[in-house]
Image (cartoon, rainbow, N blue to C red; front, side, top):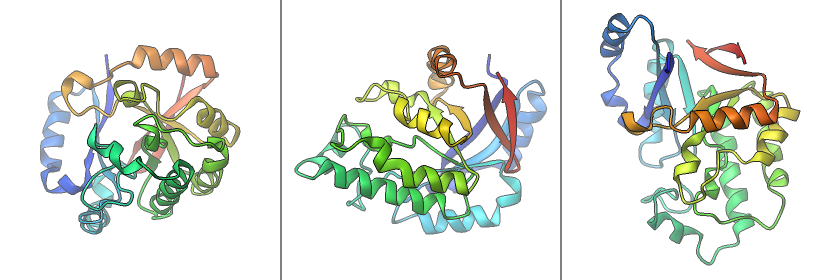
Length: 226
């Protein structure tokens, strides 16, 4: 079973984060490590308030994810299925990818995140760039490495139209070359998705020769050898 998990709701819902309830859950479940987290994204309407909330509650949080869900429309997440796919129609896909990773770098440089979520979420609808994705992501990975951040291996991509782990095999290998650490996640939006496809993820991790993953406690990285 899962003995270590972090609650990482989106920052737009920060009013619903109940630290006292998390403490009660810890008391009732002493055999499970429960971590307090949040996911900071680039929502043009709410991210400023989210950043302020994170700064105010920094010491109470264990783990902060950074993510990008908005591109050229402030009123719609590009990863909404299926309607978000319309944002890619008629556009140069390489430009879309470049714009996406530029926004990821902005989040990574914020000083407010520990780890980047679903790093290549931009592929969710199956649109692929003409250029090698490693060329498009190199600057982003260099910044992540320089900032001493992690990236997550997220099984959520297997339940999306792209049907692929986040991030891609190419990006995982590139990140390994740069010695960027990994966390693991199922991006569960319900109890039924908690730990979804972890056995499959374990096989992936083994095939890549990944020897450790990490968790965070009060923003300090804890490495687990596999």
